[in-house]
Length: 303
Image (cartoon, rainbow, N blue to C red; front, side, top):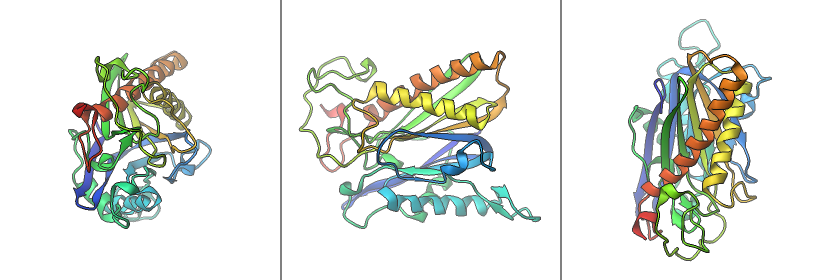
């Protein structure tokens, strides 16, 4: 990702299990926003990201499997942060804090036995594993992910936009396909150049792509919202159809404020938004490319 932004995973892939949690940590705090496009979202603490509301910074974003049950993973993230006195100051003592941890979940319940889903311990363990370098593929929240008829996973991509750095992380679990079923070719050429024979389409119901774009620029909450909106365009380029009634597509944006945004401000923000769309599309491709076969669900690399 970018300096000041850490990523950690915790998952279980074994008999009866294929699910997990990914945490994007910003211990120093970051301005944040969110954009939701799908018809079936599962989210937490997204209302506070509205520019009209009080809290200006978050301390982590929790991405998890487990559908609505997986929102409990954020409780473990809060505990890990509070143990280190990281959060929104609400009292006189240093430990009088409330960590701000928005989150979103994917629907991956059929990949595990009923009742096997992330809880607070997953979020706490993911925080403990957070680092600048992190694994991709069937890890963390991507352990039980699927994309169309293929195995999905966690993908990432980083780039520069002028003097700014931008990073994108996606948990790819869409109802749509990354490959055109009529031609066998990927929607984005980066995934591969040869046609593949797709497995039979999976049943509807195992859906939602979630993720984060982060920049080192100084942005307001409203400007961060534009960044998150642009990233959703990248999702639409890489997966078709996207933003369906059966997806809960949700993208968060983070701005660490390490560098002031150049002037004229509107033009510099537009350049960041263009880069965010490109980066998130690449992150989605990465999630499909890095995935491996799990519980008989074939990965792109195996076709």
